[in-house]
Length: 589
Image (spheres, rainbow, N blue to C red):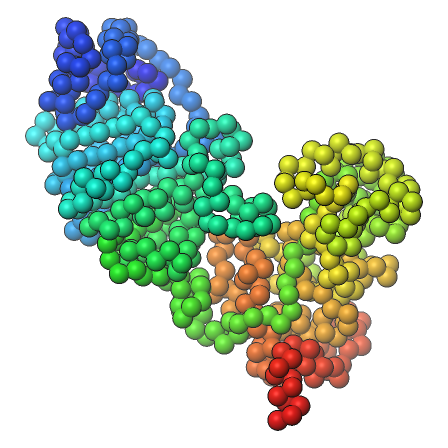
């Protein structure tokens, strides 16, 4: 049976029918519910009270439950909530105050009643009114079934979590042992914004990203991360603990930012759960736990929640470096420095149906299946992440129009120098105007990003940012023109093929693979980023490599790809990577 779109048991329905039907006002009904169950303000007004009595008098009230998964709403089932609170109880955690910032249907609150015996106050906040009612009904059902259980004072508030005053709780209960527990929404601010949700924090660049980062993705954050950091910041000075069920990426971000935030939390743990089993979603998630009001720590120990006997690994900050596996990192930490070559992201245009082309029978064919004749001058081969499977690539399956040689370059020249391309692009102006990213605002017609001198280097070494393969690819020119990569790829460019091949050998070495495995997170949206790749100190790596191994790898590449390369330029390659000051010291030393 459902009331106010919320599940209600027959036991609760019967109790409310029997005890409230003769009560005249919602204030008296609230007093009755407080005396019986400790719930403050069970009804907000007389209308709710009268509606409930009317609905309860009608049997078999069935209402279809809305699917709220698009809002990141994955309710914690009772069994998992019970296991989580039992786990905390096994750590001798026994809170006096329990706070759930997004309490949903109330399963963590009910589990807290079962497994914590010293609770004096419960605070639950929830924006979705049917869940507020279901939580209240579940509380009534629990105490009807367990009449001798401890009854704390309970406040279940219908409110946007970002508007609720948690600081008032911290102030009022400053001497109590608290527990912040829950399962915040698994969704980003931009996703909720696109759904016109009101459950959003005030517009703010809360991580203080600047310029392009704030506009192109880093300004988009996980709602659960915002809530988690708000809870930590609010309650860090109180005795107690925090445990929130969030995506693994949120846990990683919190530990990463702890080096800057230095919140008073310690004993940071991540307990991985089986999201497919618990929520039927393919999302990597876990329990983020920390102890409050303690000296800050900057690492996290990882466990499997379903087999919690021993830790699997430790990640976080080690000697000023952020690493994903302490144990493996120590074997390759010497090459953790700064790459002498600048890693770049590939080309970004956000207009693939127009800008990306196939070549069929002398024609270019776009994503709209239009056949077109274009001048070849601005058309280049392009590779995507899925193309970077082989060690060496000489040909591309796709082509793209490159309208600029550097970001912001005026594009009026296309009209006179490449009239067919200009006519084609103009015919599809609406597609360019529909691009949503603000980076294109007030820029020349048909603008692109991720373009510069490096894009036109003839020889490139690249890696996919999306795939989990620790393998680098050498990209050769096609038809005497540089090959482009899209913005899911990262690259370094060279004028000499020898330098590119030397870099390829170093980057595909076992040392580099082991290093990258110790500083990347496989569940990240992008396994590799510019920040990660810039940590590979190729100069240090070059100093470590055995010349015989280098020669052997070079001969293998020569034989397989019909190269005729030698190590004659190796010293020049080393010199190219050596900082200018160090070169001068060598010259005059």
